[in-house]
Image 1 (cartoon, one colour):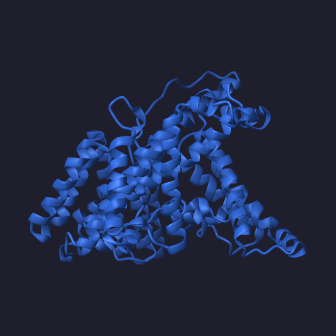
Image 2 (cartoon, helix red, strand yellow; image 1 turned 180 degrees about the vertical axis):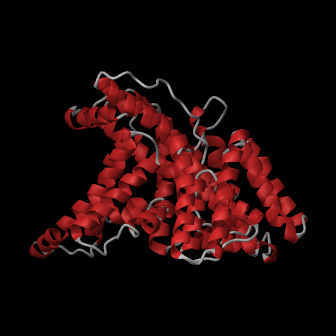
Image 3 (tube, one colour; image 1 turned 135 degrees about the vertical axis):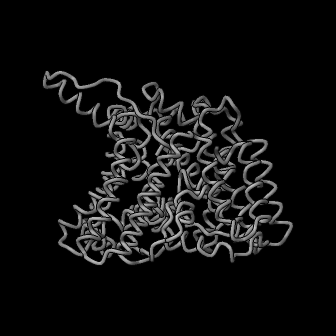
Length: 494
């Protein structure tokens, strides 16, 4: 079941209705059943994997509460980590590992061990395994008490709005809210209106922008060898827009759906393309994952509390791990490595850049300087997205080579842009929709308010005018239908 489907249109109101009708003490049980049904709609047999991860980490938390010796506590948390990460490795990386081993052995003229090993990747496995593992680590660090109620803990792991693509919630946030769910007042007007507004905005981002620009991106990346610089640049810029609106669209719908139910999830995006440097970008992009790697990988490795060389090694290790988290492909590893190298390079060149700014009397607080920082950061990030989107390293390098060598500026004026999967009319719709996105992000950047909070402060006619315009745009200009294969969210594959 996906958010932009008829099934969810019926499912969600039923969930809300029964939450209101049922006794308060049964709310978490009903949400647990609804969450497991939501996951069962994908693949019934993989619900046992979700259940197994839940049981292992629940028992790990209980055992930690009874273990006083340091060695025993370390053994418990290490065992949970081995089981969780072992499941992740088997389902997500084992086939890739065997394929890589086969190629190495074949190159050495050694008999190949296997061919065609394939495992279906359970949807959302990276998200719920990281969420449950984070819980065990938090209990180990004594940041939170272990959850004694196994059904309430199961709801924490499987809460349906964020189950398959995040945000990756921390136990102190989500689990704390679930513990007093029976004391919460449901259907508060502010929460319902704000949540529904966010859901509409998320559907707009997904169906009007992400799925529309996906047609252009797929056209360019599938046959990149036919195009020159202009089309390839349009493809890379288009993918930066697509993955942002696709993933932020899902996160926004998830946050909105949870808010309707009276639960506050972590905001996963904060205008990342307005970032002034790559490290700032990662404080704004996929916040729940980047903070997870910071707290559970980077800081335990030593963070920036050790020597400079060790610090850079920690940064590269963390971002390579982040790249591999996204999938079993060398392109993801390269993407993560690039993100780490950007930050190392930025740190190494900072003293030189500061001296240069002082010598040239640059006004580093000026709007023009800030715009330059954001533009240069976006270009670095966009270049890395090419590796993220490419099917293989060879195709990524070929794409980059053509991007910088096949100059064809005349393509900007001969109408070629309107042959890349979108005609002139569809292209204009995309431009108007992106303008709406820019204005919403500008409000968030300047006023620190999401769209729901901003509209709440406006007069009634403006608020409802914007909401109905978004609904109308989704109905008229949304990309959907049985024949449209890209209707699933990009991050479901991770």
